[in-house]
Length: 97
Image (cartoon, rainbow, N blue to C red):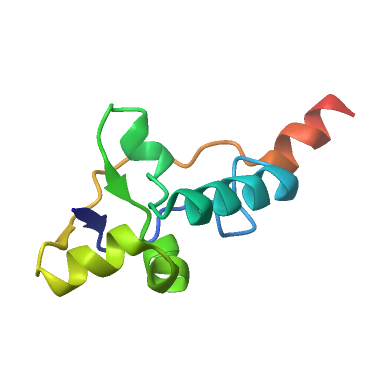
C-alpha cells in the first residue's frame, strides 16, 4: 500500500481542499464504513491508488486495511510528484458569487 510522504497543497483535510466540508465528511465516513483509505485526488487523477498522507496520519488507525498493511510491513511511503495547486472549494464559491 502506497502512502504519500507529505500532505499535498489541496489536501482533503486542509482549508485548501477542493471539496466542501459536507463532501469531506461524506468521504471520511465512506472510507470508515468501508474500512479502507482515502486515495489522494492527485493520485486518482492519474488512475493510481496512493493514500492521502493526512488521512493516513489522522484516520489510519480507524481503517482495517491500513492496520493490516502496517502489521504486515506493506506500507510504502512514496514521493508526491510535482503538481500545481488546484483551485480550492472556497475560491470556486467566491467566483460563483
